[in-house]
Image (cartoon, rainbow, N blue to C red):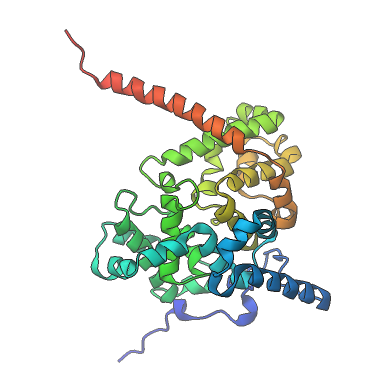
Length: 357
């Protein structure tokens, strides 16, 4: 018999070709600022920071809620500086409320994965290989990473049949699976979409993407208020936020942004909510403002989808993002959007009513 050819998808990259997060390095990739050799002083500083975090969390998260109640400002400050990578999975579960959901629903995930069927199974299988394709965990076809991702997405599509499965959800689940088990990742997806702590995200994935439309409306207004010159230029070049900003909200910057930056954004996102997505978006535009206002349409679109490497430094971009105060204005813009949207829906309903003769 003819020997079977070795499947290329089973080949594992050499250790030197993989960065510290498990992504295969590309020749043109810029350094992530985290893989260089650390000095003894930096190492000591990192260990001291880790000890502070361990004390704050307690064994298995036992002290977390008590510490948050006592010192919320300390918790917020430390999260904004970045959660230590070795504790990230546990802390994400604690700040999202997913740990409580898991404890309240024993055996539910296993039931959804093993005994239920989903109408979205073929769509999930089709999209699996598109999620973090350069990460070693997901590169092997039908390997453990792809199987875990399939299980989480399938389970959620059964758990919430109204939402089912939408392609962008793969990046949420895919990111979480790099830091926790399948069951933990599933309940964190539930916590996010159902709103265990913050506003529910499910509207990002419902038919018509209603929450995406609202967020883009709010972002466009904020951008024009903070950067009127850029807003005017976008109007002249007929640029609207759906051309560049949809993925920011649907995947919380995990789709095309450097992984080390995405992680820092997720740390804050899970603790403070979606307002960090608005803030980071505004910071990116502000950082590149002087270049963007000079570009014509085609180059503008390219620039908005390919920000320069120096804009991707979390220690530069995030402090700039924190300087934007948006909470109150977001509430006002949400009410304004609902008022406009309600009038449009009312008008459409009237048009559908049969005319009396």
